[in-house]
Amino acid sequence: MFSFGESPDEVVEVLNIVPLQGPVGIVAPSCEAAISLAAKEINSGTGILGREVRVTTIDGGRRPAEVAEEVSALLATGMIDAITGWHISAVRQAVARVTGGRVPYLFANVYEELPNEPAEVVMIGEAPSGHILPAMRWLAREFGTRRWAIVGNDYIWPVATGRDVRAAYRRSIVYERYVPLGTRDFGDILADPGFDRADGIVMLLVGMDAVRFNQQFTRTGRAADQLRVSPVIDEQLLLAAGPAAHANLYVASSLFPDTSADPDRPDRYHRMHGRFAPKLTYFGNTAYEALHTLRAMAHAVGSLEVPRLRAALDEGLLLETPSGGRMYRDNHVVRPPSLIARADGVDLRILDTLY
Image 1 (cartoon, rainbow, N blue to C red):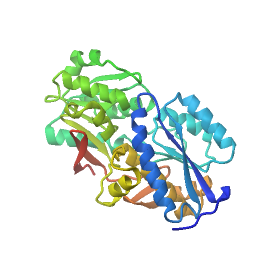
Image 2: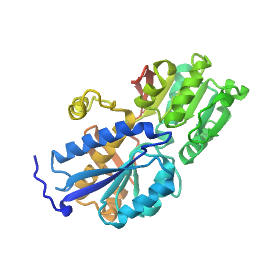
Image 3: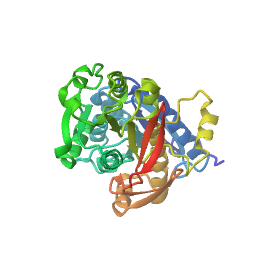
Image 4: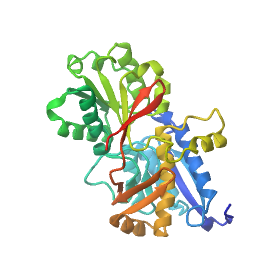
């Protein structure tokens, strides 16, 4: 094992922003456990540029302005070398404003394609063209799904994603509704005659909102007649809702913890965290990939300086992580292999490659 020094100059301090409270706080245990595994794996080699990786987690479940204020204060100390984490887009935008390209920022979640997105924020996940849109085409081909309802939370990512879905399927959208984060009762949606017209539901709900919707949806007896598809359901949310709540529920992503490229990862995870660890979920795997991607970027460029990383990303970088190679250009991954999975109890079973 590489021997690290004790000097602060020999440490890469990574700020990990994950919601520890609120509707999306349910994802935190898996994300924290997964990123700690990634840090251990990186440090078992040569770290990042020969420096030890240390991860500090802060609560991304607060109001975006509060999260950004803490990030700004930590950056002012000069002790933060990079930012990553799974959090919602409203937090990402607030953090990006105060970060201002001073340190690398790798966003470990799906994102929306906005024209004013800072180029310094590297997107680990996919835009709608990489998950929900090809999933809808696949479901139409396999099951004849033609009429769609959109149900999402009322913040940046769901609304922007819904806009892209509507643009692609304008004549097929028969219902659209956005609700505040933390909504507990979906009865008015489920009782709406317009919702009844859909044979497929595009779910853009996150965290416990998705859990409650799935439970209430199932209790109405709709699951046999209306399928659901989402890019933001992981195994922890399936567990929270219970195995009976997920008939005909599909999830699309390029970042499922598929072990074909790295079959020993679950064993490494449980050796580190024990048999009662939170499940290594799709969201946790995204956080894991983000830290390994940071290491791969720094190794490829020979630096963590944002201007040098940006210049290399402008040309395109093929970055190798334990899951295999992913091509990045500008601030996003270039058309990664996208998969569709079906909920099977509290697990996700990969069915097919979307492209």
